[in-house]
Image (tube, rainbow, N blue to C red; front, side, top):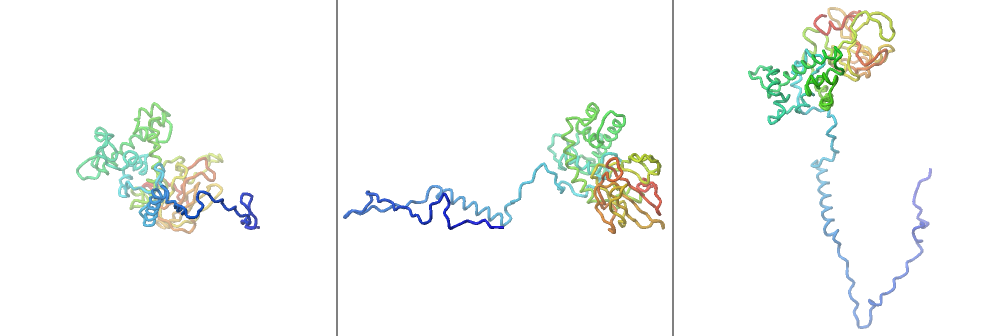
Length: 385
């Protein structure tokens, strides 16, 4: 390989040869010295306007910028896109997570993270007393607060300006709307995700959702805004697990996904792909692609890898209960987040919902084995185990 370099021995086509010399300038007869006549002194050109005015300012401003950058007084990082989702949640801390959970505990379709994102979309978690749209972080009108507000934290004052009272009140309202849109969807009156329809009913009214048969145009921007905020609040909820590991009262296992929507129960069934009728060894929970899957109880990962039927699969050994070995499995994952031999605690992420293996769509196939025998997982997730 040769190196490109400038040839200094030959002149270029646009430059005169180095041996050529420029002709001497002819003397101006007007300036030639004559005997007895003193030639006028040649005037030196002073600095131009740019040098006198612009250059000092440019040098000074450059010096200031350099000083601020070196001392940390100037943020040289590019400005963030105001429309991009931020992973950190600066508007609310984890102390509200237990109340978000309590507000949505008996609600199908509304999760703690969704409720938090709803509040963020309404008010940015800011109690602006000058707001014309409503009072408190949930922006309740007087009529709305009369219908849903209570003294949930027991401080003797039910107020929309009390954050806990507002969280619980909005949870009651959203859960009521979720129940109504679920009934409409069951009858085929409306189509769409329950959470989206609930948010649309809150902002545009249930009648508008019924008329449109889906999320109406007037509510789409609001629903999109809540959805955009949802990932950061999913992270907040995961970072603040309940002290009992997230289990329901009396349950031995905590839910492996946020919302327990059973799409195929435990028991005998005809497989949708193989058409073979046999025992469905677990329960299928419907969940969107990429939803978080968490360990149902502390234990040790026995297996984490790809299988032909179950796709990406995780098996966790939880030790013994009453002398019997307890195991849980998590199948059809899109991503594995643990490895074999790893110890995990309840609620630790183990993978993401997917549709790998023999699957008709994104869901979690969850199994519970006691001494190697398949049992109904739902009993372990409630108080019936």
